[in-house]
Length: 149
Image (cartoon, rainbow, N blue to C red; front, top):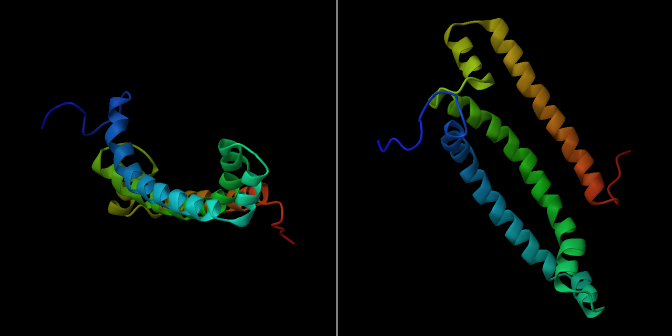
């Protein structure tokens, strides 16, 4: 309509703005809300008051004590949102004519190419498993008390 941003195809940075905005705005809003509520809850904990009473600066308390503990629920939701993001890319790539795994999968389903469908589903499942493993590693890095036996 205005001709400011291209609505399809692949090219420079301007071709990425609309698909990235489409995929990212909803997830960013949810993450912002979660981070805010998590930090507000943690900032009211006793150990934060103790750190402040020791004379530590506000930013030191927030960064060293509160933020690290507040990241555990954020990492959990991020890993869950990643699967939604993969599903969203399938549609977004098709809508914006962006060549990728999502558009390949849609074309393969429409043409009944089962080998490509199976390969694409395998790749997507593998990515999800890797994200889940990385989430478990992130839990261990954020909170050393978490043990996997």
